[in-house]
Image (cartoon, rainbow, N blue to C red; front, side):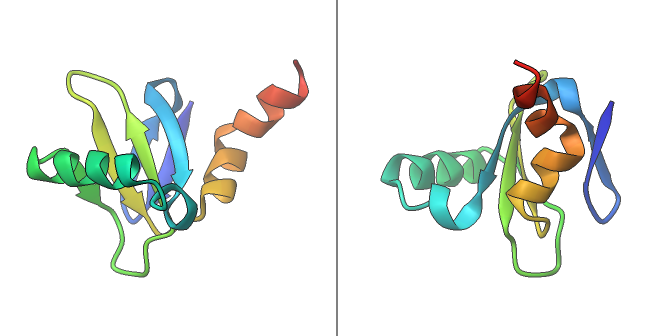
Length: 88
C-alpha cells in the first residue's frame, strides 16, 4: 500500500518507520538534533509550500525524512496504522 504525503509525493507504507507531529515532537532536543543532522546529510524532503504539520521517517537504502502539510493524525489514518492497532 502507498501513502500520499502531499503535492506529488507517495511512499510505500512498509517503508514508514514513524509519523510525527511537528509541533509536539520537536519539543525534544534530541528530535531537533536528529532533524538538523538529517537536513545536513541531505535526507530531508520538504513536500509542502504551506505550513508544515508533520514529518515522516522512512527506511530504505538511506533513511529519509519527509516534511508534510498534512497532520500526523490524518496520515496515520490514511496509512491504516490506527486500524491496525484496533485489531490487536
